[in-house]
Image 1 (tube, rainbow, N blue to C red):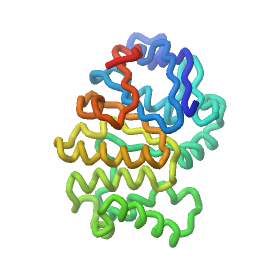
Image 2: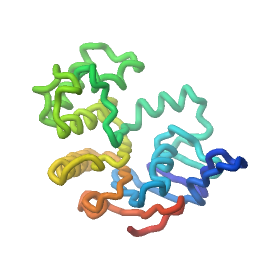
Image 3: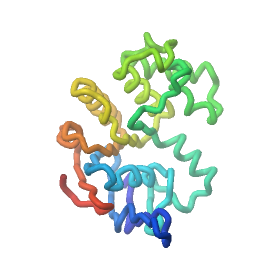
Image 4: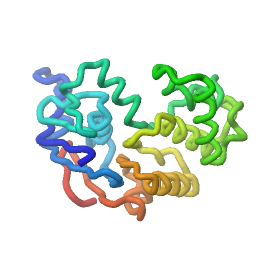
Length: 226
């Protein structure tokens, strides 16, 4: 299994008056090259679950094994390196830096890895060409359209050639055409052998043929069907 969670619980502010029980007894196994949609309403725990899968936060209890690594047992510096090398994140609002060019945004994840500048540019331009926005490489993120921002965000997520792609509500601010474009890109990534986890309450995503399995998360509890 590429990803395996067992009896995962997540509390915020545990024991305090404002305690939140975000995830409840989560068991989840995701195979290599599988595409999963985590479907559910806002506040159901989707972003928390993705953060655990991506090694951003740890569970309060239970185990999370990603790519054969027990995430809770990795020291912070190794956990950060693991994320940089193996996981690509696509955020809801893309989180590109408006003042930087598309190219500069895309290469950002490579900067701490010591990749030579020439190789950074070569890799980024290959991805931008594949996503048909290489002609925008010298435009700032503030100067390009929503669809181009989306493609730039996908290129940034792929720049380190990760085995796992994690996308949090990637179509929340897109129209139908751009959402379909995103799913087409995900289909291409699946053909490349990527494992993909998408959190979304968009039926266009959860009902897409690119999704192998759809799970439903509500009030922190996971069930096997949307």
